[in-house]
Amino acid sequence: MTRIILPFAAVVAALSPLVSAGIKFTSPKAGDKIAAGGAVTVKWEEGGTGPKLADLTTYELQVIVGGNDGTEQGKQFPVGVITTSGAFTAGNTASGRIETSQSEDLKDVNAYFIKMIAVGKTGGQLLTYSDRFQFSGMTGKNILSPAVKAAVKDIDTTTGPPTVDTTTDGTNPADPDPVDDDVYKVDYAMQTGLTRYAPMQPVPPTKITAKNTKPLYPTSSVKIAKSRLPIPSQLTTLTQSQTFSVKSMENTVAAAPHATDDMAKFLRRWQD
Image (cartoon, rainbow, N blue to C red; front, side):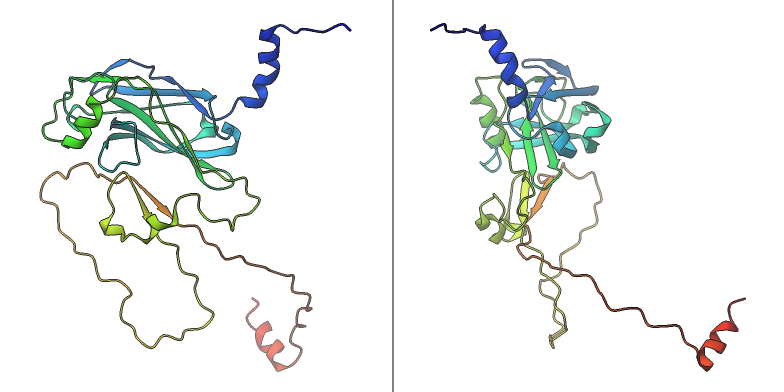
């Protein structure tokens, strides 16, 4: 029996369309040295793991400094935002400026990486990260916490954090969030880190039965800023998905006929 042996390159080429998905950053590259105060250009292409670019709608790009484990609170710090409202239909490139005062002059190389928060067409998010690179010329003082600096010192690679894919295929929107429900039970003001979690929004009732008009939650304190505020330590809020479903049906009752009595005469007076 004759065996047909295909070249390895041909096999890879045949299978590549089946596995090419997700987002792969092509700029900045691993180990790049970027001067602070200038524009940072971010480029990407389809690759890696996750949904295809055609299955994503909008994205947010952040510059992060810190460790690779985003689940450990306080070990990553957002240096700046390149864009908050990018659209994948506009292309695979975005740029923004990072001021020199946004971070400290770290002697540790490859402390920074790009974080993309992409929104799926049928729900969920794709969190993906670039390789690590350097920033030179930072002039900030006492901005980074000791936890962030310690996490940077532990880095010995140019690889960024792993991709987190929580997008859905839209087949069952009533499925619970892929995130552990316990995080939604923690009081919002007690949470820390770059991402916070808000509980499921209540469904309005069909009738008002409450007799007590007392607010459900206490009022928030407000302080007027008299000087420049620090960079916020929380950039993203995820709200728990609703688990209820709604059914609707067509109203087959015919519309009521027009008035033919004195009311019709009254209405015709105002037609002109």
